[in-house]
Image (cartoon, helix red, strand yellow):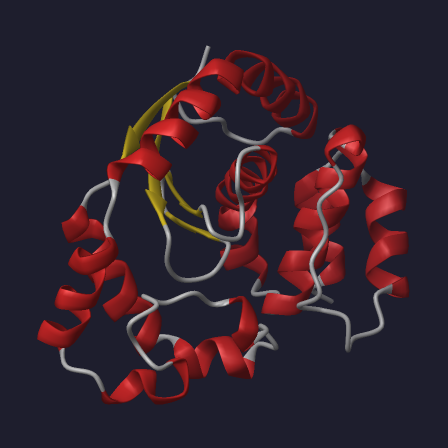
Length: 210
């Protein structure tokens, strides 16, 4: 069974806020909803770029508590065995690489979830509590699984998110999870390509890129 290592601490939360602020323009350019990005409550969200690193650090420390993280860590570990088997089956039939271990960082800041190659998943518990957290970790692991094809065929952000959602819906229908990042684009063509070529994800992404 694929393993997970769960991490949470003040230092990570502080850096998460700083990194999120640096990426705000990118989120806007790619149609992410600013309302869904969470920051420390002490900070004015409309002036978030004006704060110093020290002010961010103080705000994170002021509201930090292990309780939320420990509760969700336990919930994730208790449910991981069944989720891991579902992911293993989905990846094996699509030729995607499943890592031996994923490093899962729990936070209260940033977007709902994100990932870093090769095996890092970040989950924002404010937007993804308990069951939502399980959906988010699957979603981000799918991202990690297809990223080599995304890089190879250079598909755009909206196309990538749509592919992840379609893969999710096909393989995990009882855990429905979709986004609004691509809602302004016509997905009819990419949806048809997905249906025609699934479960071959390399073929799906290659053809969507054209």
